[in-house]
Length: 269
Ligand code: KMH
Ligand code: ZN
Image (tube, rainbow, N blue to C red):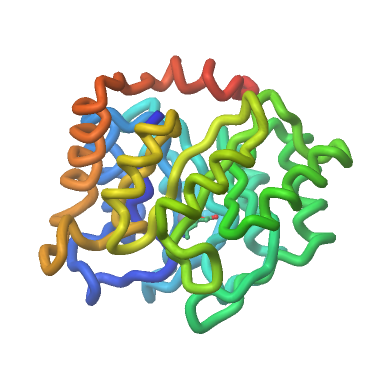
């Protein structure tokens, strides 16, 4: 399963002029990624000043523009951005995307704070379950996996299957090393689905290792702005194509949207 993450919460067009920010731009980039083989689109939204936003109008508009172009599965980020309050972030699931992220723990995130207080996370997990929005669990450190398992044990998450992103390379979380990835892969519960999110320079190597170990992959400008050192990626497509090439050379075939729905056992809406 290949996910495209076209925008993210942090970079701006100053960092890479090809970063899609506005709804039309995001929809066009997602469509290109779908045509190249992505089955899931992980979305962040921006306001007119390019700041991360949980504005439901912008989110709805972007989701609609994507759905007009292609049937890719939409996964809304409830991480949104570091300055956006949890109450605004959690409201995004009311739009009933097929999937949304769930970040289980608070942490330092670069020079700032990513606030995910336990009571808020529990409320959001319960609401997602109620609405039939599949959570993708973002684990940035070893204890975050245990926090997810506690949510499961409390009946707030289904394991049909659980879906994890092992996030490596955020300053404040696990460093982007193969050793950390292996540690986490060994601890992922049987039957769960997982992918690597490798932030920054080690993106290509760790994505390749994740694929070789049986994981899924994510590609896009949210995770790295560069194709290689010193060479900015001219949009998301080169990163998506690079990842398709990695899968191909490992003898893996890409899951279609329908296959992804089945593999994740996505609730129909
Ligand atoms: N930005 C990544 C470090 C989310 O959007 O909820 C993690 C991420 C989480 O994609
Ligand atoms: Zn994200």
